[in-house]
Length: 177
Image (cartoon, rainbow, N blue to C red; front, side):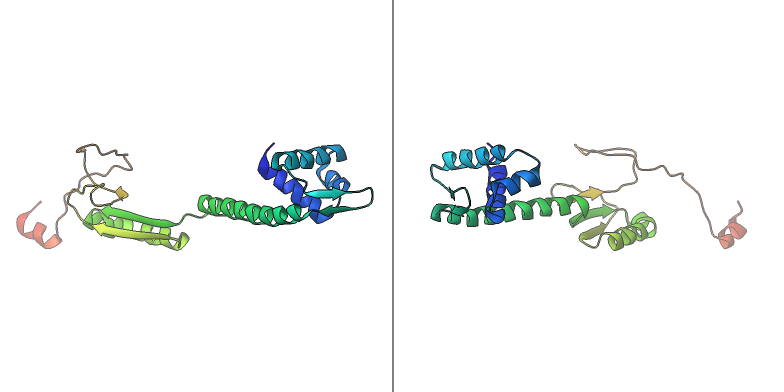
């Protein structure tokens, strides 16, 4: 017997005051609901409901158990909602290490857009060209422009860039091409 399902069933029977009404809602035979409540009572070692042909009422143990069931089921629902919210809406903090010029020119606008789309996510950005120790410095993600890895870092290539030589027109006029 799944205890949470049994609690839900017991709660519905207590709320509706009828095994038949719960059975009809669930699309099962009345005997299925009656057996489940009886199995719950056997598991607990006490009667939760007094049954007659016309009436169904809770025992004192049933009333106390009903309140605890409501509390437990509400907590379970809240926990499931919290987990679903985590999955649906990202939140928390991300500590990033970004190369100075590339980070400011290319990544900052993208990170601003990300922050606007996900206001529950805090971004802590460290703009530096030095090699960082992800573990010691508590960095979640580092972006680097390099061809080599050091230590046990795990890397993914996210793009390729070509090198360019650039000069001011005045420099070229003085020194040639």
